[in-house]
Every structure is written in structure tokens, then in C-alpha cells.
Length: 250
Image (cartoon, rainbow, N blue to C red; front, side, top):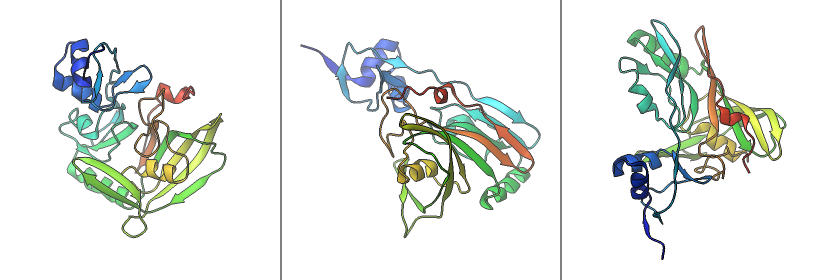
């Protein structure tokens, strides 16, 4: 008869690491069995299960001067974890843990104040790339108010016409293959999970987004990438990760 134990304990033995480290790897979305991501660290699993553990890439600096640092954030790192790499800088914008791409830091308080005003005035250009379910063949503007609810350190956003804050996203078709599309998304506002919620509302959930869409068998992250950001006279671009060039998502 097969023996079972909690997933994080089985992983800890396999990788010869502590239970807490194993649990952290699962919670960060880095552990999978076959093509399926392990999501519940305390879930029971066969003790002879073989896991694969994804390595997290390093944070790379795209540009810096006396006022600003632009970095390319890898997936599976939270914004707070990225901040630890730049203890003397001030975070200007956040990305979800599984979202990769351009993140900005101010290097002094004066620049931070000016930059925050630009964000508040919706003068910062923010361009993303996403791989979504469905065939996107024409430009679509989505104006839907978003309400975010935060409990126990986790956030969930939804369309809410009474309590939501105005949010605008515009999607542009780039490539269609089968029933999947690669799209460009430009956002004027910056609500929590805005793109993910808007695309799901429009019927084009992002592949790999289990929270607002459905899990994808061969994908272990939300396929959303912050490709280009423009602020003042600066323009920063982060190359698309390799998984955005692969269309074997069935």
C-alpha cells in the first residue's frame, strides 16, 4: 500500500532542505509534478513522488542614474523581495509575484515625489504583453471599475460598479495561434490585478492565471510581462521571457 505524507515534507527529503524552505518553494509556485504545479504545501502526496523545482532568475538592472533604477523583475519574486536588492532605493511601482518585467525605483526623495505625481496623473506609459485564451483579432478598450479586497496578506480584485475605482486597459492583437493569442496591453491606471481582472472580464483570461482564469497544464506562472515603461524622458524595456515564445499550452 502506497505511503503518503504532506507535500512539503516529501519535497524537503527529496531536496535535502528544511521543511520551511520546502513550504516556501511550494508557496512561491516553483514546484511541480510532471506538468502540474503543486499549490498546496500541506496536501497529502505519495512519498515516492518526484518533484521538479524551478530556479528563480536574478534581478537585472536595466538602467540607473542619480535619480532612478529600472530593473527587470523575474517571475516568482514578490515586489518586496526585489526591494531587498536595493535597500537604499524607494519602490515606485509593484508587479504581481508571477508577473515579470520593468519595475522602477527612485534613488532620492525629490525624484520619488515627482514620479508619484506622474503616476497619479496617469502620465506614465505602461505596456504589457500577455498570452491569453481565445482569439483576439481587434483592438479592445476595457473601462471597468475595480474593487480590491485584501485579507491575510492576499489580494482579490473584481469588477464592482458601486465601490470600484475607475480602471482602463486597452488590448491590441499581436499573434493568434489556435485558440490562444499574444496581445499587447496598455494601462492608464494601476489597480491591483487590473490586467488580469479586465482580460478575464472580457473573456480572454491570461494563461496560467488560476485565480481569475484556470490553471494551464504546461505553464507554471501567469503569462503576463511588463515590457515597456515610459516616465518623464526615460523609456525602459525588458525583453520577453522565453515562455512567451512557446505556444505548446494545451
